[in-house]
Length: 160
Image (cartoon, rainbow, N blue to C red; front, side, top):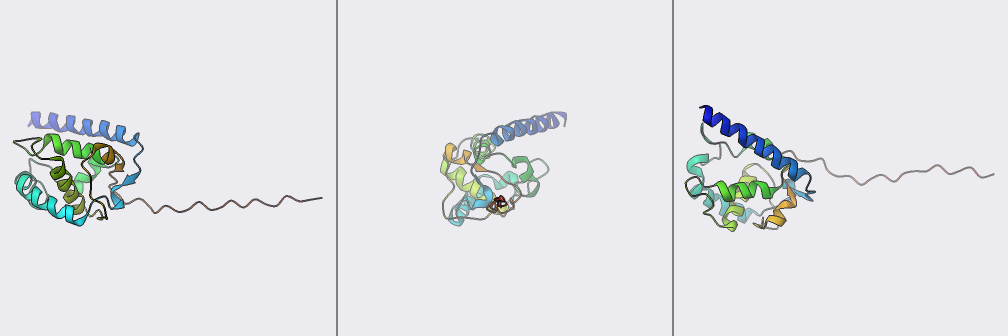
C-alpha cells in the first residue's frame, strides 16, 4: 500500500513538472479544435479493446488499481501538450509489454481517448509526430470563444 502511494505521489509530481514545461512551450491548438478524425477514433477503439481494456476497462472507467481514462483523468493532463500524454502511452503502455505498439496505433488509441472524453473530431488525423503533438494543448475545459478585439475609439481632438 505504501509503495503504491509513493508511486502515485511520484507520478503526480512528474505530471505537474511535465505540465509546467508544456505550458511554456506555446502550443497553438487545443483538444477542442478537432485534432483527430472519427475514423481514427474507431480504429483506436479496436486497438484499445485489444491492448488496454484489460486494465482500464472497456468503458475506460478504470479499476481500483488502474486509473480511469475519462472524467477525473482529464485534470491530470490539462495544460500539458499532447506529446506528453502520447509519449507516456507509447513508453509505459500496455502493461506487460510497454512500448510495443506502433506510433500510429498509439495515435489511434489517443484519438479514441479524446473522443471518449467528448472532444470533437475534425478533418485531420492526429499525428504520431512529436513536434506536431507539441503544438496541441490538452484543454480539459472548453476555452471561451475568442473574440476580435474591439477597435479603440479615440476622441477627436478639438481644433482651434
